[in-house]
Amino acid sequence: MSDVTLDPEDKKIIVLARSARARNGAAEGAAVRDETGRTYSATNVALPSLTLSALQVAVAMAVSSGAESLEAAALVTAGDGPSDADTRAVRDLGGEAVLVAGPDGTPRQS
Image (cartoon, rainbow, N blue to C red; front, top):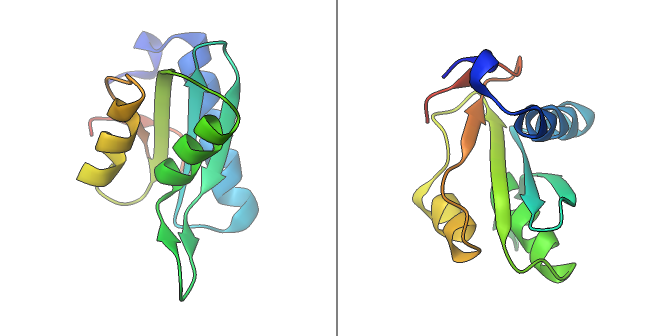
């Protein structure tokens, strides 16, 4: 996947995910865009009693804010990409794919 092929709004959610990751020094950052164009960014949560991926947190934030569907989702990670649970969470709201980028923001295949 090349940066040139991304829609400007998709580039924006990658930037938001990257910024969240950097701001918190987290392993991963994610951002989603809902059907109205609102965006939600998050990082992973790793507590003794609660573990959520960044994408799961971003989806939960969208849902708790009233989103009914997702237009796009992005994950910034040094890891392999979205887990099956991440992909299912995005699909629960009608999202089709997760954009994956490395820590430098360069998009790559998931």
